[in-house]
Amino acid sequence: MRIATWNVNSVNARLETVVEWFREIQPDVACLQEIKCVDEKFPREPFESMGYNIETHGQKTYNGVAILSKHPLSDVTRGLPEGDGDDHARYIEAVVEGPLTVRVGAIYLPNGNPVASEKFPYKLRWMERLRTHARNLLAYEEALVLCGDYNVIPEPEDAKNPENWTGDALFQLESRQAFRALKNLGLADAHEVAGEPGGTFTFWDYQAGAWQRNNGIRIDFHLLSPQAQDRLAGIATHRFMREREKPSDHVPVMIELRV
DNA sequence: ATGGTAGACCTTCTA
Image (cartoon, rainbow, N blue to C red):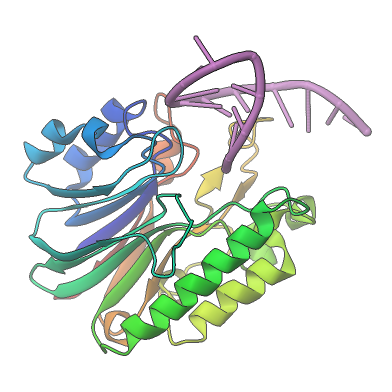
């Protein structure tokens, strides 16, 4: 069973490209981030006509996440717990009732820049809430996949030019420590489990010819519970999507779990 | 050292 994550940077601006990718790849499940529209504006028809069930947690202009699945979705929840006063749409979770039953959380973690602003402590608080929630989910001892745009560069090898990210919220020690603490609950990065090489990037800025220079970073991940780790068959990063017309600045990343 | 791009939207914010 194949589960993808993709920050599409506006599902409506990207509709042709996104639909084309779905037609080519036909993932079982896809978690989308930065859909940048309210639930009513999500372009359901082209995906429903391909057989997808759709659950969204939308927001106007910013953020917004969705889970699309060829298999039935149950137990859908929107937002992380303890979200009093947090009006950003950055998390949606559902149980996929497929050939394998797997709980999937779609994450759009706050960027946190600039570090000197209130946005950075917001990022760290959000990561702490995610860790608390992940700890509770791991207690179910199910196949669990928490995937999305984590907005964290875990290690220097996850950036072409790590020195350029000094002082950036994505590479701050606190961000990297919080990400490691999340993994230390017992979640493994599918990229590491599969033994993928360094330099496998998932994001290239639109500016300064970052793509042409391969000046990328790896910030889109699948974190797996032990039950999901044991079923991991492979991982693929769809670099080819960065070459397409009107690309997102992120490319899809997809894992396969043995059923 | 600076500026470069993209998306949504109301002229500026977010990334």
